[in-house]
Image (tube, rainbow, N blue to C red; front, side):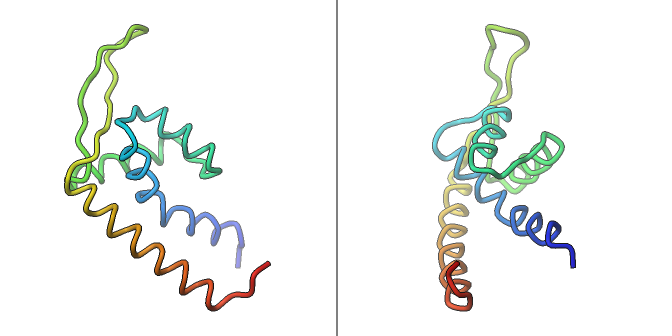
Length: 109
């Protein structure tokens, strides 16, 4: 068993919830999302982020709009939808239940 793969899979499992949470705070440009994830030590590259954003948009959890930029072409900003807020709330509830369940089975470090 490769421990690195297990850790990577755990992180991948929560990325959609983390992305929705970041965008819930304020509309976000993809590089802003990557920066927030890096700050949280959830390193993500554009090749991982863009398919997730597209999937969340296709599920109706996100929308986007274009905003003019002072330093180049217009930028695509993502905004959470009402369905996205509902899904995020459900994800957070299930995440907290999951954490509690896991914590009941492992000893603290």
